[in-house]
Image (cartoon, rainbow, N blue to C red; front, side, top):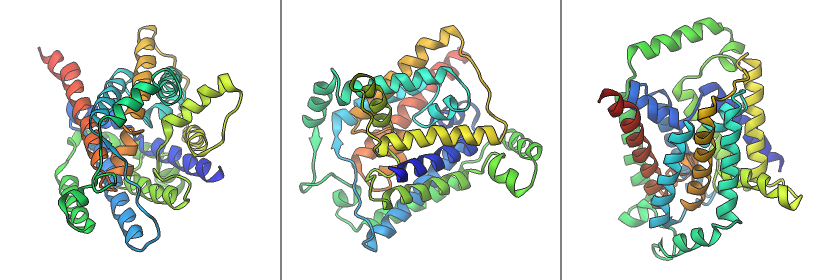
Length: 345
């Protein structure tokens, strides 16, 4: 699956150059009013949504919104959020850190693999199937979308969401000291084209639009109806191969392999690769956090923060809006209670 490997390589490169981790985005938004990652995610959502619907209107692609299992979508998203906060990472932030030399995050990847395996093929499969099938919601025999629910043309919803996205991009302004640090980092890396591409921290718009373009490339291959997604299944497949002795080189496996390689190469080129061992007291949280992310993502209709917020909310999937906003709300609430309220009390 060469297409998946190439998409993964590009994704790994993009997230390394943008240090794109949604847990960091939510935490920095709450703690220090740093909106860099949040704005990158909004740019990605906007670019993907417009691209998907243009291609759909032209008949180039057929959109494939995620299904809506009301209980599974919420429960899975909450489990995923707890896992994010425990590990201090997210679905792409984990390979970002692991392949950059942070050894502890390989434990988080292992946790994701075991958690995903347990609900896809393992002992929790029946729990997942029951929770999803018993709470499945359909609309006219299809997975429900916002435009179908409202009874309007999909472009009406797209334009409203685009306007809201632009408004947020204008309104969200990070503290001046955050911009000062970023300017200092960019200056230290140099101003050549090579440095700007391979060494400096990319601007949120560049990161977001790059992710959106990659979403469309992934969709256009015809091999990944989820666009960028299937990460947990890829890790779970590696774990399953320990027992079966067979590793299918399908899209999920190829994609996550490419991500790890892309991050590693980018970190080495930029001189950012450093071996860092975790503190012993962090090891349980790193592993359990990954375990919960694995279980939660598969339970929530096979959706992590990237799959729901950047791949399927742009397709107007109601299930993804429910899971996506549950992830956003749960994670920011936990960060506030743990790092802001407890510190001030």
